Length: 145
Image (cartoon, rainbow, N blue to C red; front, side):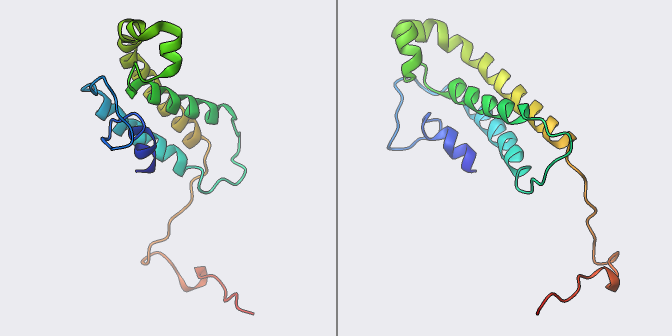
């Protein structure tokens, strides 16, 4: 949810009184926002317990970050992006950058999937005990001192 808000509020895909956009939100922006937020949320969740993962690959963080950044550019307003307007002008942003945004969305989702795949591939699985399989000897010792 946090990632959806971080991507959706400044791009005005999630309507809010602070940000606005002169170009309407495209039909595919909301599904891309939802898919990207779910993938990025899963990716962030894999870092909750990060204790020296075997075969640690530093490119995972770069791929995930790049995927999130591309999602931001993909769902954002083409004429609200100052970098694009400076480089291409307003007309260029609408004529050149806007048609590439769906491709940026596809690439961003692919990058997030790949980052999550790499992250999950190297994580260790742990056994989850249910109440029917747990034995009294499996209970942790009393740690109070």
